[in-house]
Amino acid sequence: MKIFLDTNWGQTLFFSQAELNELVAEAHEAGFQIAVHSVGEASQDLLLNAYENALQGESNETHRHRIEHVVVLRDDQLDRMQRLGIIASFQFFVPADCPEVMEDVFGPELLPRVARWRDLLEAGVPSMGGTDSPWGCEAADPSKKNSPMEEIHKAVTRIGESGVPPAEWQLDQRVTVEQALRLITIDAAYGTFEENMKGSIEVGKLADLVILSADPLATPVEQLTDIEVVMTMVGGHVEHCGQGYQSLCPAT
Image (cartoon, rainbow, N blue to C red; front, side, top):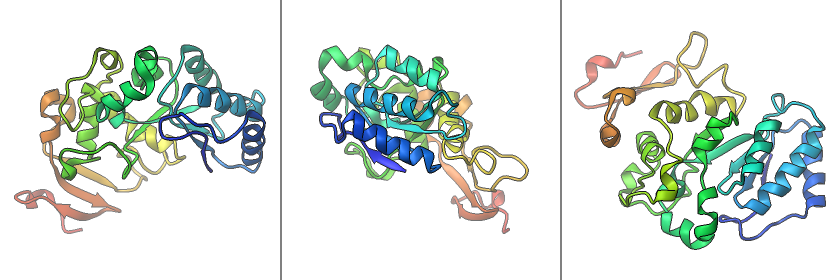
């Protein structure tokens, strides 16, 4: 169940605490996994209160309720997410593609609390990455918008489509290539109750996979976006074969 709790940049709340508590509790008791669009600090407070009220001390492992975007986060809110086991579902383009928007909307006081991807991971908060496609800030090269390697590059450098160097407040929240890969594969599968069928290459899982032109873990960071998908397999069948890579593409 998806709930919109605030606007895109968190300026307006759509529910009171009592209304949100009732809605979340009802969905929780009905067995729904709940994913709530929550960007601003005030929204995080309301949502964490509602989740804690619904869980009543129960583990979130069974339900895997999530916060979508979780853009602004105080230390105490991060600690509550870790304690409750609430999943952080965030997008790598924030703030890499729109640093000016972040600075205008949140101002210098809040910027250190924006897009705390590394802090979430280091605190042990279950997390997943994504693109929020087709939404996002304007791309300089639309052909690369939301491509996995482009998103990984944003996660590890905080440099977006415009190529603008990241501001100081962004640098401490960069993640590693390995962390970014996990966030968009096995961690994302966990966040949708699909870790037993996708997210890693194992016997018994869906044969949905790609072959890349280079190993992201062994590629210089500045060359990540040069990595190409040379083969795409869906359900064990080749759906895309890059020019010149036919030898890697079985007919089945």
